Amino acid sequence: MGIQRLSILLALSCSLLGAAASARAEDATAASFDGEIDRWVFSGALEVGGFGHTAKGNVSSTNLNGPRVSPININAGDQPGTLVVQPADSRQEVTSALVGGDFEIMSPRVADVPTHPRFFLDANVSAVLTNDVGLARDADPGEMALPDPLNATQIAGERVIVGRGTKTTVQHQGPQLHAGLGAAFTFDFNDQRIRIKPSFVYSRIIMDIDSVANRAVRLNNNNGGTNPPRTFENTYRTIELSDNIREVYHGIGPALEVEYETKNRIGPFAITLFAKGHGSHLLGDLKTRFEKTNPDPTTSGETVFWKYSQDRWVWRVSTGIRFRLVPKRKR
Image (cartoon, rainbow, N blue to C red):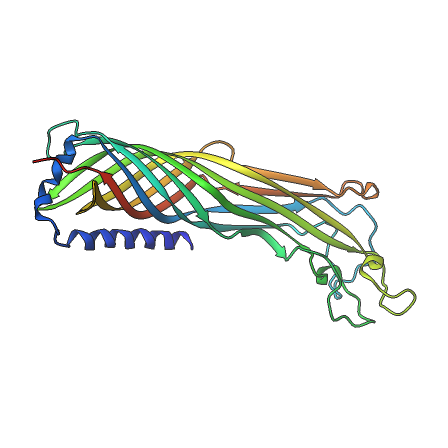
């Protein structure tokens, strides 16, 4: 789900609110909303949405310093040049679905003016539903082996080895935390009520970042046969490097929520529907760097470098249903 799809989700949420706003109230006596604008109101909400941003990854390396067959055979698939890995970079969208809960406390109105301005505090805790995203990827790093099938007289070049390659994998982790302070402005249209709620939000976002580089360096021209039979181990030496880290990002930014009063109730709870959009500007250093060196002492520092660059702005859109504790007053 890309950022464009997140925008579509917000548009659909707004359509939902618009449809709800056109519905007739089931309880005509609720038109006064039980004077809730003059109360402290506590509420909880069930919320679903999406979260996304773009990010960049790149990989580079030193030269090979250990043994290698000479001359190399580009036609057979040997890696050109003398670098441990080929340089690569890419920028991609990193997105996730969110499912969570929102908790809010809203003050009574602070001024007797048409929009009945009020203050509110809210906190959101969301689980993350996501897949990992590969950046700066070359081939499919994994367990290395000779390709199958392989002719006994065929030279298997370095770039046809199964399991070779490089990539940086990123994945959102939960829970995400968002806490906001804002103002609510109420608009009544006949017997319909809508609140517009701008706020300023703090966000805490977790990201797992994993990097891997697998390289098979060909050592000889063994084309099979029985002297000795060709195996992966007697034809190649391997460079297998990896690292990982969990980054926690902190950000601040604006949010805007539109909330519609349905005038339906479940016991003491008034039911509202809402849609929300939120942008967060992340703080601090957003570049994560890895560096790993081949531990074989005979290779004189064959090293791979990875870098992950997190974009400064991240975006969240959501929709949900809120349960506001507004007991009916005795008449």
